[in-house]
Image (cartoon, rainbow, N blue to C red; front, side, top):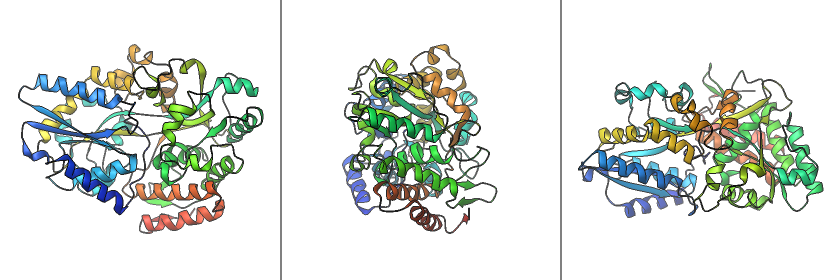
Length: 458
């Protein structure tokens, strides 16, 4: 779960009220007992998925044993992604409700830093020898614009194409499939639609209800494959400005439009269901109802023993392919990476104890246990090179190898609003309410509002 793509933070009154209600139910803040550590994290809305709960419960038991007299109070937030962020930020605003340790999605970390919600961890990290094991890109994802570090990453992820070998066989498509262009992907979906009409040919996440999954797992996987990989198509770092919609942006929207206009994807009502990801992992893929899924490296965690969606045959029944660049231009494939991190709130009552808990979670043994349980990609070099990690689960090597051609979102404070603007443009072409050009123009206007007009015309 640490690396799920997640919804950009909505400024919705209803969610804020829901957050307040949840906080009242949670009780007092972290300052009530100096010997009690309060740890807040996102709990899956799927009652069958207990990966994080099980892992954290094990760390709690270990920590309390190693620190006599100290207690760990777990404060899970069971909510859809967007609502989780709203509730978490509500908690971070006051010392009465702030936990001692929180689970942060790195795409929102700069926004929370700017709001003054998080504590820099550099004094702790300087004394922690294990910090040297963390890869540079993962460290960068938790670094603020002020150069300080505000979180300890617990894994990363990559994305690619999952496909059903059974459906491919029925459609006359190859068992070992590696598309070279976007058109190859669409042509395979068209073939499935024609020859296996009772299944969904292709799933790509789209629209505001799906949130950051639409932005990152679909749109950015397309957009970052429209250029040569030498520059960021969303943000101009040299000028510190956001880039308006150009040809690559419109081409990416056109791909999404094609999927839904040609009925190569799920029904639009299903595509715009906030829980469509759960259906992909728990129903459509395991039950042979979906031909191709543009999705993340973490999917197998839902299919492990004890998950509630056990599917031990998945590695034999599913194939894996890298998402190609638009026209097959170098480097030929594209991926996006994200991640989650453990951060200490600025208003935490027990920050020193909180970092001790991080140290316990992030020993080599515990980190490796988490990566494997969560189907995550290691961010510790000593784990990534461990043969036990590499062979622990089918697909780990494939997704780890994609790191060499991956990209990271420009996770600056404005990004959540930019992400929402992308989702709105995607939803417009998905439903057919907007043309690609209209959606791109709408994005440009929303981008200017989201960034105080700090934009570069494409």
